[in-house]
Image (cartoon, rainbow, N blue to C red; front, side, top):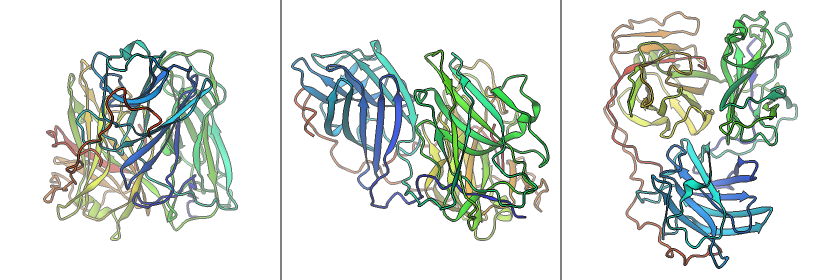
Length: 571
């Protein structure tokens, strides 16, 4: 019997960025106690984001919300709602210096500002922000991770200039602000739901906890002749715990079909965790704070179940508790919607990047250090079908020292195409499977070069590749269809393993394979055409009621040339 297809019919359907339709509204709870919420829509034609903020504020309390490079207050770029000494409500832009003081900006960067509601129980305001204002101090919005930062304090204020923000309550969250627009498909009539949830976990009063619950058995027994259904997944987060549940993943247990996985509920890295649970490593679903559900394209579904498929999965929940809150219990998890309607193609996951070995070595005390892993043309030539594969989603992955991840795409003739995925503000604490704006064709003879940039200023010793969180990885899990029999490990230029999924090598000589080269580099559009920056009223004169992506920097020296591209497991 063929493997069963997991069909993820999520809340939306995949479309290109250029379609002109009602934009999708995204939402994140930033701070439950203050009921701080943010909703946003993305206008790709005009390259603007419309942001709506709601919070429970006192009549004169001020609130600043904006962006920073890594979530720090220093260097943040904020839109501040505040009340002056005449009790007039204003919204003004400003920057935070290295000492936490605010410099007020006379220009109207927070455009089309509107105060929608101002009551003690609810304040709601909105503004629009360009992706790139073409001013050097303003944050550039891109398709990678965006660090949202907010700060609040009592008012009224005489002026905004030189306000010492570091004296007040500060918070941070990570989102993908510019995400692929998706359209909701009609759910199939036979769709059913299954929830995989933690069981009233007493969330520890420590900053980081990874909690594992296994096993779950969402599939019919292997001997059952019925098709196991496909799935849709989305987050189910307990009310009041939105700021604690950082990300969740569902892993398939890659064990022999008849093997039972013992029950375990506890810290994922506890020494008493049953060894058999270590086989639950293949990612089926991944969600992070602020993420929308993942959409599988209509052409494909993820295969799962059947007579040769171990039926068990494991749920992992990352609790982020920097304020060391006590007494919280949590039963959050992932809701799967599944159907027996199969799609034309099986989808699969391929791992691009570096092997998890000592050859992946990062020196200590480095502000910036890059390593690159290569999927070389010689291997994709023999491992991919003539029609190629279509990549529709990507999940970037490093451990604690990774700060930038990108996968470059080069045709067999040396022509560089747009990056397969790129995150200039990558954080290991915010990992999700992200839809690509459009499906990308990878053809036989293409090269895929995955580069990770690390920062090890606080590490006294060398960091090696490995599975521990204190080791490092450099991975891009690409989701594609149709499924192919390619499993490749590469350590160019010294040696390379180009393997089939059963472990056998493809025919060919894989020692001393040359690195792929770019003969025709990608020419990127200048993000800031000759136009004046946003102009506005001066400080104190503009009342609230009035209403391209980052250009790539010159490449740094590539410190390493290793890599892997295979059907891999999460580390």
